[in-house]
Length: 382
Image (cartoon, rainbow, N blue to C red; front, side):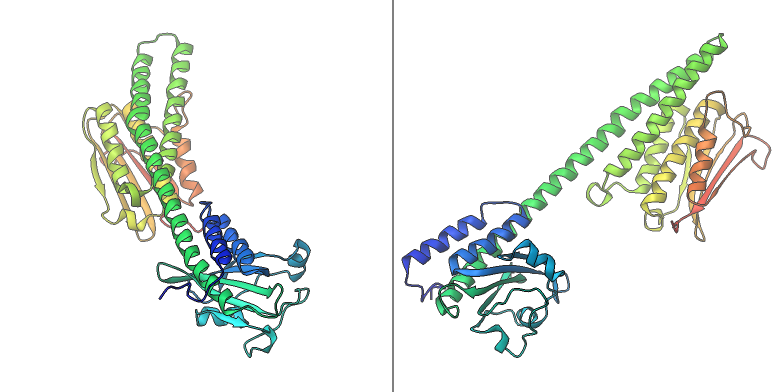
């Protein structure tokens, strides 16, 4: 049996087709919801119309699109319906409801202050892929005391088309999100694989050149340029971290740590020894993870530039509730001060303090080389 059986007026059938085309003419969900209400009001000849979108639990309304009331009336009411009374009945029992007088129904709560009077009522559920998305409400039939059975049939048919339009809009939005994520991942990969590598190589070349410059002032200026490059690399890495979505690209914090070590290997002339906790991705939140990567980048860069080391060991672990990062090398040993124009140690200390932690820089227990220990709360409270 045709779902439109009982609708004999060809003008109304043509009006239904027009309404269906209208709600499918936009790909923005808010615009589609508005088109649904406006088209229903024209098709059914109602003074007021609304569409309530169910919340995630399906027990109340999270959005409410209404047409027909003036801005002053809406402001006077002061709040959107939450899904009680007749509106709540449609949520609990999602099937068409047609009433000649709203106030006569036992579930009617009455209207809040400043709400315009409404008498006749027609409500139908809007389903998306078999699930109730929300409900379409029409009140005050023009030219009649109540909505007719034919009005109900047309409203149900329009609600069916509305469900398809809503689903199409959602799918299109999802495609757009995926395209954006792909663009973000491509940009992040380009920054990581091309830009950072070139900046790093340039910095190392300048660092090597410093040793051959006899003019102290010129050497200091070149060293300042190296430090600026390092800061630029740190900022780019922060941008990469923000751009990447591990759930889409499969890039994890652990992956990033190993990538940093690989990046440093070319400059060190050997691969650092790595010991990274297996559950690091589950135990470290994004904010701390971003700082961790910046700290490792700074620490390894310092070893490359200043230590002259033949071995470097990096450990990343969670001890109780603290993230502990150590970088140990067998190089020339470290003071606690900065080289001219440098700010690396101060940056490391600042990053620790931001997360309520601390930085320790000292000679290793065997008296050789340097041990850097950076520790913070794994889950900061602020």
